[in-house]
Image (cartoon, rainbow, N blue to C red; front, top):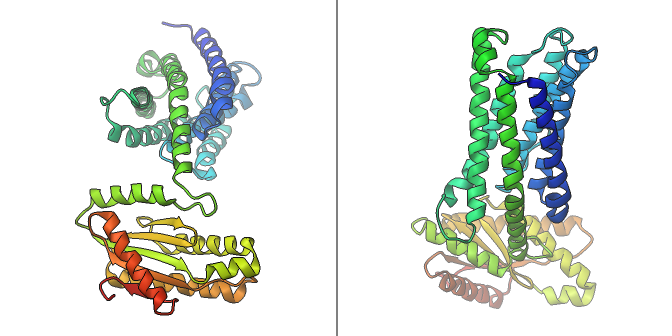
Length: 387
């Protein structure tokens, strides 16, 4: 029905244009990981399409496996790009496993004479990776919804458009894979309705979706990165006071029945460290305490730098015994660091209060308990109920 060579040539021209615009405008402007992964995906798929143009020549024996590897690597980058929308990364082996599997199996499946060496593996890897990418996009788009305020409307629509295109192409390749296994690549049902022409059309639509959404989604990712930067302390990387309060209030409001404890921690005699050993030693003590807290709390807990040498922790759902255990573990870890380090590390005083609304009242009670702990000689934890 359509000339495959002409479709492939048009697809290559479109991908070249998308790559130039994506890299030259979007990626070089904001340098987001999302745009970077998409540019790499377009470049790899473009290389795969150019390799397939050599099928039917003396170079087919190496062009076929190479084209398969490049295409699957490009699709893997689509998954990696989609994960960045949720602030997640993808281990390198997840991206490398698919191309290596498809390339090796194609190389041993007579690629010099077969048009579809290891075709089943190729089609399976394509629809699985695209399905994983669509799942990531769905997890981002679903909470935002389709309708809503005008602010962020372009971001929401772009997410849904990208999800729709990835889901449709993934479904198409899943059907092609089943048909390939059922009738083979040379049977009329496959060649007539599910051949390379239809796949090229689908991939062209996906390329258009990339070009349409990349700028909007990259801009939103850049804004989110700036929001995250503004909510974190520059020295420790922990949440700053404003970021902690915002997330803690959201956590408590969404699960008011869970309860938990707030802990205020203060590094004892911190001014003495700064005066006697210098501010670099004080910064090291602060960074060490932040590192210890990060290593000992759960993923659901929040840790922030309240100001100066004071830190704050929210332990959702934690009992009094759990709060005591966290305090003991943190102090024990700091004591061990002090024994092996070259810089004197301070002891810690803690004020602990059960979570209750409003949050500021809970923090005030924890602060009162912290004051009692310091007044009682420091290096101890005091519960507000006991005080």
